Image 1 (cartoon, one colour):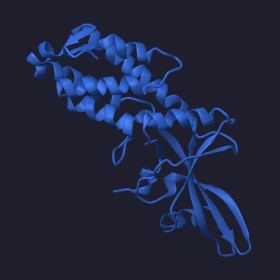
Image 2 (image 1 turned 60 degrees about the horizontal axis):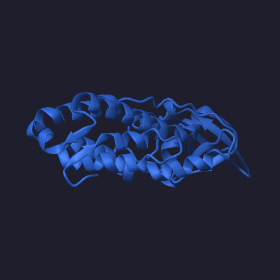
Image 3 (image 1 turned 180 degrees about the horizontal axis):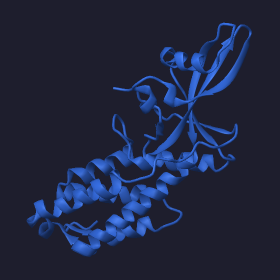
Image 4 (image 1 turned 180 degrees about the vertical axis):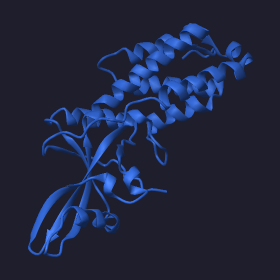
Length: 240
């Protein structure tokens, strides 16, 4: 970036159209732009994509349809069964519908390279033992037996293809955003001139981020795959 406070939008676009490069440089440049124009919405979004959605709800494109699988123990025998999430009590029947991906973009890009090595891999997240009492009633209702059955373990799985898709989705959304910026303010944005109408100009930026980036996205990535699982450290957030 130049010290004369001109933001060169084409540099960001060049980063985004590279097919073999990380998205992180473009995010850092847009994060810098957000600080120059004092736009909190763009700053929060780029911060979250760089550092991860810690304590935040991720956008729809970072969510995949989840499947709940339990380990049932009956005497000396155990078996693994699926429990429909819809059978859980509130708030778990809605909370576990989707598995969010909370990591920063650099970690996701690295995970995506690993997932390419597996055939239809799954993200697997083991649920803490304290969640079992909330899952047990649904499992017992579904799998009846004359012998006592106990849920001794549970996990959420989701299609790991979302890990590969997230960077492409972010690239696509940011490229569209940059082209909209270019149409409105040109490819070389003079910060002083932009900030002379900061309220109006930031209103455009904020609305675009809210309506076209963070509020859009398809979280319905289906859970299909075999036993090749991507052991992920993706967080499982407890319901409020």
